[in-house]
Amino acid sequence: MAEPHGNKRKPPPMVEAGRFLGHGLTWAASTGLFLFLGWLVDRWLGTMPLFMILGAFVGAGAGFYSLYHHLVVEPRERERREGREEDRES
Image (cartoon, rainbow, N blue to C red; front, side, top):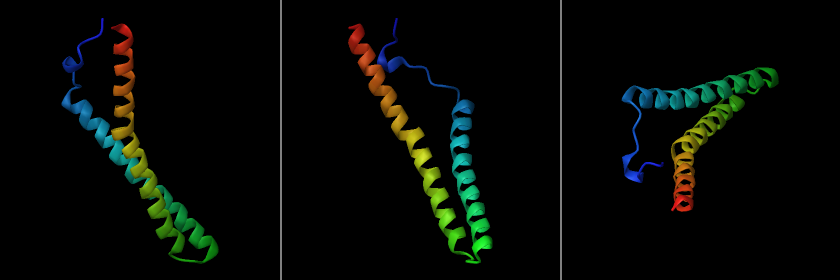
């Protein structure tokens, strides 16, 4: 039996903190990885710091997209799916 929409259990605060910390670390890691890859390309081509800066922006953009997707898009899709399942049960 499905629980009413307003009575969902919330995860403990430490679980939520861990989830958000993981998203932040993903953003930082993607920025750092692309920054490093840009630095390697710059060393190879001798174009310091063009690709390093470009890599930092691309990594930050990719990390932000991942963050946005996990914190905004996925919950919205989950609510829409649950709403359809509740309509079927009624």
